[in-house]
Amino acid sequence: MLEFLGVRNAEARHKPVIRVVAGDLHRVVDAAEKELANRGRHYQAGGLIVSVSTDPTSGDPSIVPTSAPALTRELSVAATWEKYDGRAEDWVRCDPPTRHAAILYDAQSFRYLPPLAGVARQPYFRESDGELITQAGYDKTAQRFGVFDARQFVIPDPTPDAARAALALLEDLLTEFHFVAASDKAAALSAIFTAVVRPSLPHAPGFHVRAPVFGSGKTYLCELIGAFAGPAGNAKVSYPTTSEEATKVILSLLLTSPQSSSSTTWTPTGYRTAPSSGC
Image 1 (cartoon, helix red, strand yellow):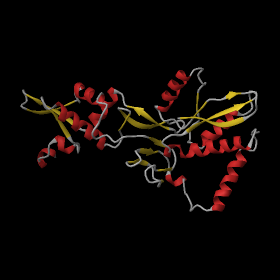
Image 2 (cartoon, rainbow, N blue to C red; image 1 turned 90 degrees about the vertical axis):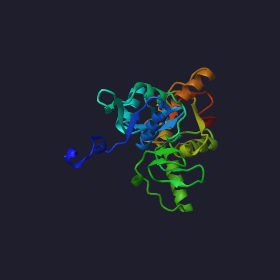
Image 3 (cartoon, one colour; image 1 turned 180 degrees about the vertical axis):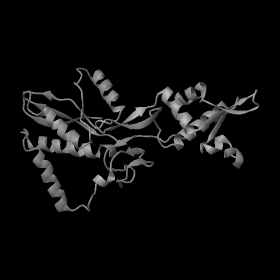
Image 4 (tube, helix red, strand yellow; image 1 turned 135 degrees about the vertical axis):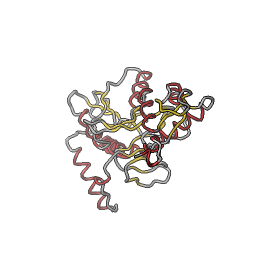
């Protein structure tokens, strides 16, 4: 049929064609990056080619760096690759050349892949203009990828009465916690609000939960706060003993854009919730 219609096999695949021409390495790599970006599944973050992956068990999304073999596979899907065969005196199909894929993989700066600043697990306020983004997917201005079902977030017009009713619901969740002072309860509410709007904040504060005895509900409070950030549980870690190790642990967690992480300690002075260093 294709021969009868005079249609080449490459044209019938409805895919762009990238021809590997000697001396045009930069053009070939640029074309590969452009077609990869056109698929709408890959982005750049921290000098790496990344994608957004959702855990099938928890439903929690994360930013995942693309490995070199995975990049080669994606390039083969994004375009049809051809090289000139002197014996056939024609262009023939080939796999994406390892050299070209490796150069793109190690580029660190990219012309076409859109930048990805993070993922949002629920509607969020865009930093540049304060607009509430209720549509899932990639927002070019905010440089964030929304991974949520917009139908689950029907947001009515805000009123003072609705705000007071919502605050009462949140305070009811904290009735079993025995805070030392009203400021500690306010800090717990602040942690809940921060969990919700964190994707909109250029810098989000950290919160330190302390209590005088073990088994007093510190972890439960952290789980409660984390529930407002997204579908998955907190990434639990033991807080390191030195600031240098703490920095390494925090950065390793932030690389995957977790919804939240928790680390608690106990103190003989009473049950307290307080802001700590920002992250």
